[in-house]
Image (cartoon, rainbow, N blue to C red):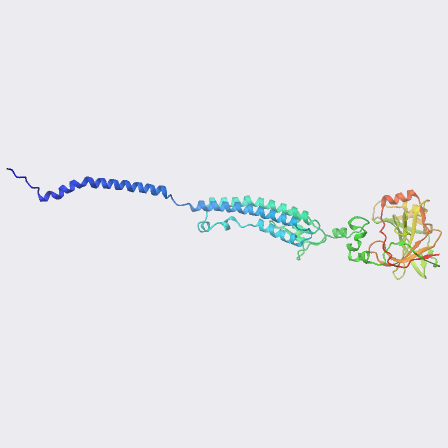
Amino acid sequence: MSAEKAPDAAAAPEVAKRRFAPKLMIIAGVTTALLAGVGGAAVWLWPTGPDPAALAAKVARKEARRAAALAAASAAQAASAVAAEPAESPVAADSAPDDAHSAHNAPPAQEAAPALAAHDPAPPAARADTHAAKAAAEPAAAASLDRLQRRLGEVLGGKGRIDASRPGELHLTARQGGVVPVRHGSPAAADLHAATPASGHAEAAPHKAARAAHWSYSGLGGPQAWGKLKPEFKQCAIGQRQSPIDIRDGIALDLEPVQFDYQPSAFSVIDNGHTVQVNVAPGNSIEVNGKRFALLQFHFHRPSEERVNGRQFEMDAHLVHKDGEGRLAVVAVLLERGAAQPLLQTVWNNLPLEKNEEVAARAQIDLVQLLPTDRRYYTFMGSLTTPPCSEGVLWLVMQQPVTLSAQQLDIFSRLYPMNARPIQQASGRIIKQSN
């Protein structure tokens, strides 16, 4: 019988090592593969973090577009608000410039950017994009400002002045004299702004003020507005003894006749823009109620300003006199169509070619030719029939009309088809008439 030899105890560890080596290699390979897969998944699931510079540029461009949109919307809203207010409203005139100012000066894109852009400034490329976006927004805001200015000019009409001398701003000044339209950015805007007083109210140019206060017989400067054109014209509106009047219910009395002391005289003719006026050399006068009045000038109205029991005549002549104390007396001669008037023809022969150009005649006139043969008259207290409508004027209206030819009437009508003030209220004044 043979016995099996037992393994050597010293060789046991080496045998165990050879037995487990393949298993360890397999485990290491599997572990490496797992780690590689997990790493790939991590790379796929968690990419690299955002680029702060790119994010800042994107946010800046977005805010620039938003600022431009807000500017256009604010300008449109301001224009709509102004259009909805009355032209005289000071609120519309005052608030519109503020709206336009805030719209044009919207916050820049850099100020609106989030904290990320503030802590991590954009690179030069991003800043260039931001400036380009802001530059693109400025023309839109300027166009909106121009549209707002034009709309304000339409709404305000003559109630204020628009000053666009400073870029991005519109300043409105309300006033009674009228509006001076200024285009945004025009050279005239700077001149107007320089001429504006420190108070902010524009002073109207002298020629504009004169036109605004100029009186006429029709339109905005017509008789209904005379009392409001200038403070010194207020009697035209509030006076209680205004002329002309419709002469009715006169008290018949034995009045002293008017003493006419008229002599052949040199004269000159001027078309003053309201009538044809004849200036007469000194030496002609009248005497009434013991007072002497020197003749200054006479002029014409068509149709007659005075009426007698409602009847109006083709024309009348007013001969204006003044005494030593400055009081006025006016002799009115009524003119109706008929035979030619010699004195009138002499005046027409010397009519000037231009308005406000006085022409000295080489001939003389005898004012007795203009008077009727019947010297009876109506008398009452009244006023001048043109501004300033001063009262305290003694009126002497001849009862008998004097004739003029159709041709003579046509000559004056071509110059002044109507230059008569409407009839005023008699207001209970006393009217006397010669028996």
